[in-house]
Length: 133
Image 1 (cartoon, one colour):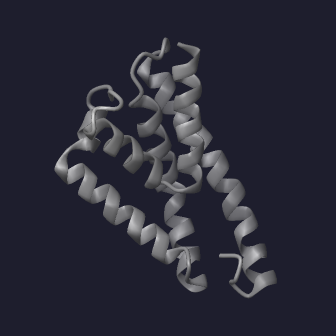
Image 2 (cartoon, one colour):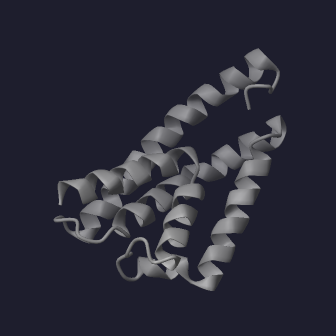
């Protein structure tokens, strides 16, 4: 049970760095039969869910490389990252805590990681002329 909770929080933390990739990986893993996702979060492994996650990942990957656009994407991430963290955390089956606790813990974990990254990002961009992006 503790392993499931740690996995949920680890996935949420990863969602703070990239909102789309952890969800895409667990959706593909679920689709392949490697893991089981709790309802209703198992819908991310549906065809529309996979398409949305893949498009989101591609958008995030590309916008991350353009200094002017990455600031806008980071601002949007203030909403997207905690939602992604909440979803990937709550999607884990077998946790011995209520789903609402997983949602809140996942959102807070992802937002904390995202906030740290967003705070450091402008400094890195300025100091390296965008190369660190």
